[in-house]
Length: 337
Image 1 (cartoon, one colour):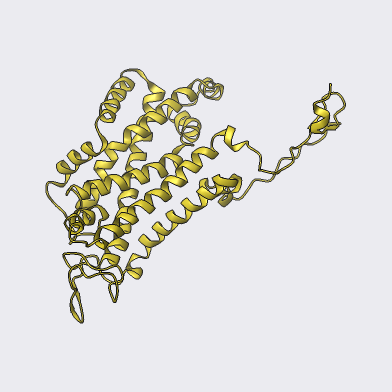
Image 2: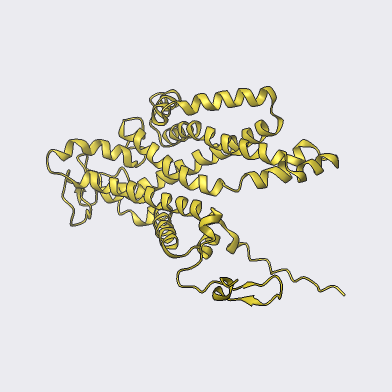
């Protein structure tokens, strides 16, 4: 009589989410880095969501009921982080800037994911002339400096316009063009590897169509690294957006708040000892990029079986079974002849 095998219960969907599942299996320094990254990233996202409630003023507001705002006022009073040379409240600009950054990340990374994954699946599965053309185009785009390519695309798309959605989509499209080759190359390599697996060959023998094989068998297995790439590309998107704004190709202050543009306008203040107009937008960029990078790097480490398999410090090793007697073997007995 055969002994029935007991299968462990399936964990809830929330426990299997990328960041949550990594938190459950992280230990030591890995867990500390991941928690810090999650906290910083969570603060960034919550600030962007509740920006209308947290910001004391609008991103382009220059006055209130008591009159016009003073220019270059030091932090304190009703302007906790001071004001800029144009009279904008620094705290409000920093808070509203998080909303602009999140919008650009969502639009740019979503478009990059869609185009990069779709082209990578088609190129890797069908191969031939389509694969050769897409690889050459992707390599050509990847060879250009990231920021320079983003500047060129931004100029072509925006045509000097600085409206909110015009600036958002201009930055998003320029970042998308930069990110698509990264997703394309990763998904293409995984598709080529998976195409030779036995389960794909079995599906072909059973008469499954190419569309069904790509969508049902290859897509789920080829896109497991996307959460990691998303976090790393989100931080790079913020840096690219800040670079575009710092060089004058971002969004004007009357259309939206953008940290890179505020840093550009703060350059002239440094020689006058006015530090608050540039320090606080810079801190916002650093903390946001640091949080997203810590999350991405922690996920990358925990996805490595060699690192994930390390035992907790101070835990007694699980005794292995003796193949002859079937009894557990202690570490001391394991070393005996």
